[in-house]
Structure formats: C-alpha cells, structure tokens
Amino acid sequence: MDQQQQAHVLLFPFPALGHIKPLLSLAELLCHAGLHVTFLNTDHNHRCLTHLQRLSTHFSTLRFESIPDGLPIDHPRNVQLIGDLMFSVKSVTKPKFRDLLADLSTKSERPVTCVIADGIMSFAIDIAKELGIQAMTFWAFSPCCLWSFLCLPELIEEGQLPVRGEADDMDRMVKGVSGMESLLRRQDLPNICRRQLDDPIFQFYVEEIKAITQTSVLILNSFDHLEALTLSYITPFFSRIYTIGPLTALLTSRITHDVLQSLSSFNNLWEADRSCMTWLDSQPLRSVVYVSFGSTGIMTRGQLFEFWHGLVNSGMPFLWVVRRDGIGHIAGVEGEHAIPEELHEGTKERGFLVDWAPQEEVLAHQAVGGFLTHSGWNSTLEGIVAGVPMLCWPTIADQQINSRWVSEVWRIGLDMKDTCDRSTIEMMIRAMMKERREEIIMSMDRIAKLAYDSANQGGSSYHNLDKLIKDIIKKI
Ligand code: UDP
Image (cartoon, rainbow, N blue to C red; front, side, top):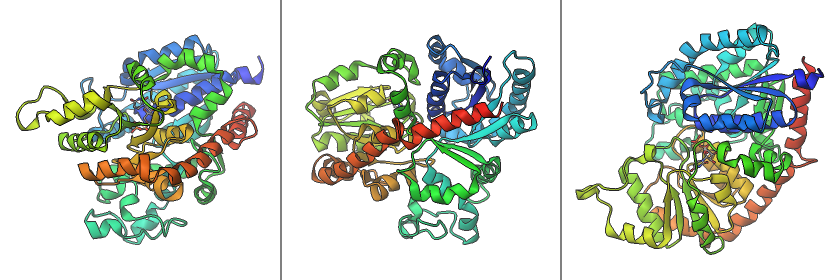
C-alpha cells in the first residue's frame, strides 16, 4: 500500500450546518486525491443528514461515523440555545471522541493518521495529540473574525468590551486590533463581543482561541489575495497556515462538472426545492434578489414583515428562503399578525418562496442580480464565487465583521447592520440593484476573478491544497 492509500483523515466539524458544509467539501477533495476519510458527525446530525451518506457511493474512501452530542433527543439545538450545544459537546462528546479515536487508531485495519477538527473544538486536537496523531485545526469562520478574536485579550485589557449597544457606543472606532483601526466600529465586532465578559459563551470563545494558537497548524477557507493584510497578522500565531478557499471553487476546479452535478442532490445539507430554478429561468437577466439568512438564522415576525414589505416595495423580483424552523408560521395567522393583502399580491406578482434552495446554483443563475444575506462565511464566499453583489443583514457569530469587510474592504456590497425597517430595506435593495450597482460590480468582478484564479491550477489555494495533502501523507 502506498502512503497515499495509508493516509486516513478524520474530519470533525462543530455540529452546525455552516461548520459541516465546508468540511464536507474538504472531505470530498481529500477523497478525490485518494486519501481515506472518516467524517464524524453527532448522532443527531447523522440522523438528520442521512442523504450525505450517499456521497460514499461516489467517493469509495469516504465513510461516516457519529457520536452523541449529549443533548436530549427533542432539544431544538437552535441558535438561541447554541450554548447548550457548545457545553454539551465539550463535556459529553469529548470522552466519546477519545474512545472512538482510540478504537479507530488501534483496532481499525486503517488507523487514523490525521485529525482535522473544528476551531471551536480544541478538545479534539488535544486528544489527537495525546494519542500521537497528527492534528490540524479547521477555522470555519472568516479570517478577519479570527484576527479580532486573537485580539480579545488586548480588547479586554483596554476596557473596550463588552460592546454596550447604545447608539453612540456602537459607532465608536475599536482600538487594539492592528490593521483595523480606521475600519472597525464597535458594532462590527463579532457578536459575542456584545456579551458580558463573564458570560459563559464569551468565555468559551476566549478559551477556544487561546487553545487554537497552541495547536499550531491552521486551515482556512479563504484565499491569500482576499485577506493578505489580515493573514499577515494571523500568521505569527501559527507554525503553518493553509489557505484553501473558497472550498466550493476548489471542488469545481478539481472535480468534473458532471460528477458534481450527479452529487448535487446529496451534497446539499437539506433537500433543496428545485422548483425555484424553473421560476428563475422565467426572470429577466440579473433582475432577481436572492434572499437567504443561512441555516440557523432566526428573525421575529416583526422583522419578517419589514423584510417582506421592503422586498415587495423595491419592485424587484425576489426569491426568498423562508425556513420553516427559522421564522415560524408564515401563513394562516389571523388578526393583527395576518399577512397584509399587498404582500400577498406583490409576492404573487414578483416573488417566490422556498424552504431551502440549492444556493450555489441559484447564485450562479443568470437571473440573479443581488444577494440579501446574513453574511455567514459560507454564503459570503459563495456570493464572491458567483460574483453577485450583496446586501448584508448580519445577526450572529462572525457575520457582523464579515458584512463590514464586504462593504468597506472589498466593496462588493452594502451593510445594513442592525437596521431592519422596510424603507431602509427597500432603499438599500434599490441601491444594490441599481444606483450603486456599477461601482459594486466593478469590485466584485475583480474579487470574483481572484477567487477563481486562487482555486484553479497555478493559484494559491490550489497549490496550498496540494501542499496540505502532501504534508498529511508525509507524516505517516
Ligand atoms: N444554504 C443552502 N440553501 C439555502 C440556504 C443556505 O444551500 O436555502 C447553504 C449555503 O449555500 C451555505 C450554508 O447553507 O453554504 C449556510 O452557511 P453560512 O456560513 O452562510 O451560514 P450559517 O448557516 O452557518 O449561518
């Protein structure tokens, strides 16, 4: 058996869809290169995402395993209760992971030779090292978020945290994050900075960040030309960094279109409603606003109505992902919460609503001209790959800082930040689709080309993936 065939990588994402998605792409890329991969989910996600296992029919060296997340079966595992998941994984999943990894390393005929674990699950890295297995951290958020997290000790020491949330406080510039002094306002800091310093979730991140700087090897879903300055600040904290993004673009460059097409139905996290593709076919070129707030985002009914009015009043056709678990019941409510007639009419005329869309295909469709997004890191990269201008409404995690980068660093979109009223939404949709379109498209075309070049032969991410694979094999 050659070294390539001996290499067995275990990938372990944090159990949220936005973390699973990029690691799944990496799993496919590693299998495509001939490596064996075990993809480890929690039992809950393993049950919900059974279709993913069909990926093994194409990638014969890919297999799936699962361990408990420690939460009761009926726990909602939603974003409001994300702390439950974080702490449960850290306490309950950790010993289960140790047992599984020990088994896979000793009893299995092909022992695990490398663990790649999510950046907020440092216990997995520690355990791999204890067992003498090569370990690497995969950071699923943006690099600019990571840099602001690495500066948390300075931000705390300078008394800049927590961000209090009053209007004058939110607009103040942040001191203590090198390279971001004239850019970062307090409202742009990742959302955990709005928590009290002794808040368990804030403390969770402080500890995880401290831990990942000790793991020393880091994998980022980004590309060198997108974040050269940020990367220059992050680099000294790690012995090696592999920037291998956008992973979705690497998949396209390495795996043939026909194969990807045949995998598309089970390569998505949930089953997508493809009827929207037929609807898109009937829409004029670059006219449609695609609206999606990711896999976990939750909005109040009031916010939903503000978006709905804004979209209808903008006069643009729109395709909107309204997840049933994210917003509650959209139809059938009477009284003051009933849906106003003008929204029904406007949606019938120009709108299309789905539970879950094939997002990457939607963004690549020629009818799509703008992306109203929550600025999750996967969505941001997918918007870049497709070259679609973005209007950002961030809510949690790294979204606040990503949206700032989209609007002020890369200039590929506009940032609504904490505003959510119908007239602002309408005005900003028009700005993205019409008044400011030309300037945004100019920057977007440039950045999209950089993304394409990075992921294709001769590009930095293409090269870094080869290097990552070589380094994984070399350590056997
Ligand atoms: N997504 C999708 N269909 C949808 C909405 C989202 O396939 O209708 C995918 C999207 O392509 C992205 C992921 O879900 O890859 C969401 O990840 P992101 O990091 O943007 O946000 P999160 O869900 O983690 O908040």
